[in-house]
Length: 627
Image (cartoon, rainbow, N blue to C red; front, side, top):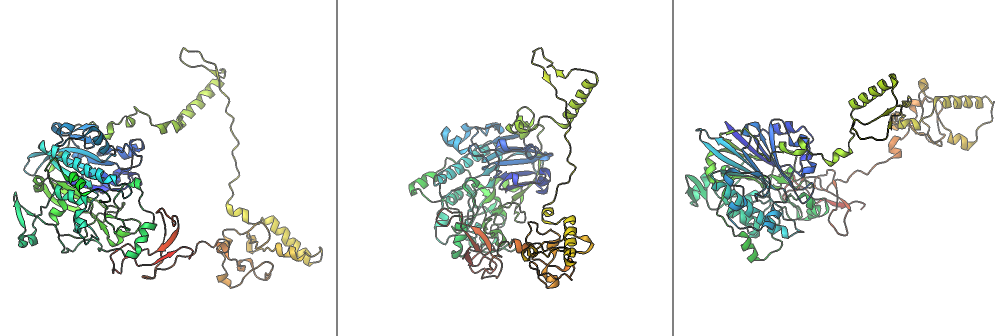
């Protein structure tokens, strides 16, 4: 038996409109961890929370609505024994042997800081009992996290991010001290090594970024069957497992999707000008304007950096994907959506699954599932050799026990719904009919002993149903048959001399025609009536004739009379220009950055961002709209 654990930043749970059970089943995993659900508790709907065959555990942001959030779905065969929201131990739920309390954290924390770090809905912990292939029972904890992203306009988030890393590390250490194995999954929001980035900086600044330096402390560089590093002499054994001290790997390995590419410097305006993820989305989608790298060092002195990097624990975990594939390049998990970077696989690897080194013996494989679409991230997963023993009782923090899903608590939206159902209306109607047939009065009294004023029941008067069908819009632009016959008769009488001829202006304004089988006709000018939708199919291309005003050949049938159709009335937008590099239609984008060009539109190459010199990537084409 095997157990599959999957992690995916879905960029909004409500964006998936399919049935939730079908969606979860399609992922083919036993423990499914979502990040960036973007739902708060008041927004969570029952079909999303309670899914047949699964139990779910959510963490919600308590600061903003539609922001952050994580959720873990466990199949029936992996029902957890314990579950807890957050990393501080201050929220609902409990863990094995008190591993989820504040007191067991290795470091000292202020209550205010813990509350702040755990108020954005960034973590859910589930604990399970598993039997390995030998039948030995072990405990595992799956920590589902969505780590913060550093916003360039909010440099204080840099400290927030590192402190969140430290809290995560201390909670994992406390859980491991109880004898429970630890698996950390989620969006870590930092690409660790150069091999994890499509366009790393050539300078030392890349390695010196604060987030990467912290991951260097957190991660053990352990690899499985690393043949090339064995010959380099820079390795050592760690409990029977190959371990190397350096992860600067540049060799390539075939089999991955897409190609690494670099954006041209002249296209930096694309990110600056195009709409980018807002601060509320709080993600680390690759930044085209900043050469698609996570900015983690906007402010802060060097001594404060060293203070932030100090830790109260030496607990370390292993990057499971790099454990199996230490040299695999282009294994990216996140791409910038607006620059279509996924088409050229121009992204970063910021989604990980970590585990303690003692758990490596239970792993069979680790995967980056780039073929799965639906978000600007792709899922990552691991395969564990073993079988989880499902718990007989669901943890108390399971969404199934939420009062709003048990009829114990009403939502605000329920007060804006119609209370009476169809059956209630039918019952009331039949009751009124019975009262009237038995000669009862039209007054009813409440059943309780409290006297109230009689409520007069008015007899329902059925409204007249409108039998006339609703007219189509095209009916207002056609000529009635009676009007056509009168005008045809008037035209014949005019020819016979019974009436005076029409004036030139009248003849110009009343030009109309009658076709075969008394079809509705086109009135070309003058009258307020115009063209029907069927007649707009007529085209000058079929006959080569043009009709204008009274210049009509009366000998030709109506079906040969032409007009320019909707293209004459509504010309529509001009076609986009073609880019100079590929001779393909350019993409229309809008400047969203504050400044003199805000909301101004421009055209740029529609292809995905890529490395300089890559013919399949974006070219340098740029053109303002209106020029």
